[in-house]
Length: 125
Image (cartoon, rainbow, N blue to C red; front, side, top):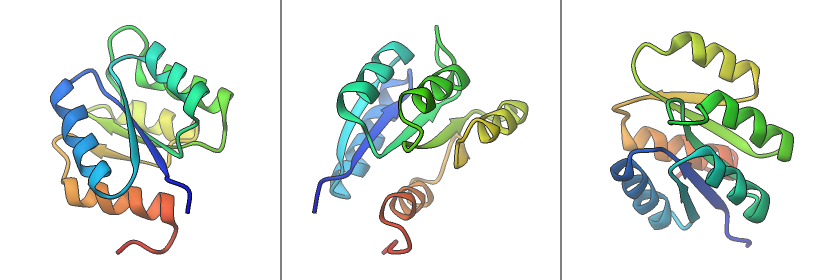
């Protein structure tokens, strides 16, 4: 079976490292980007199956990155990560095609289950 790819986009290094460890141990090939420019380069070159995307990123915000990801490849699944109180942005992200969101600090097991569900379909465990 082809290795599934997860791209983690967050300006916080600690979060990227944590999520990369979690999803590598789940058997995914992981990529990371600290900004929108790098994230979009990875989307174009490696076509990840799923992107975990932080809303607040310096330079290009999460909504802008989301728009560009969907322009490059509408099939890529996107899960947003938000800080508390960005509900207006979440609504817009959903309209732009984000599947769901997690509010930081998120439960890593819930996120793992959600990513597995999105990538593998009904086969979560």
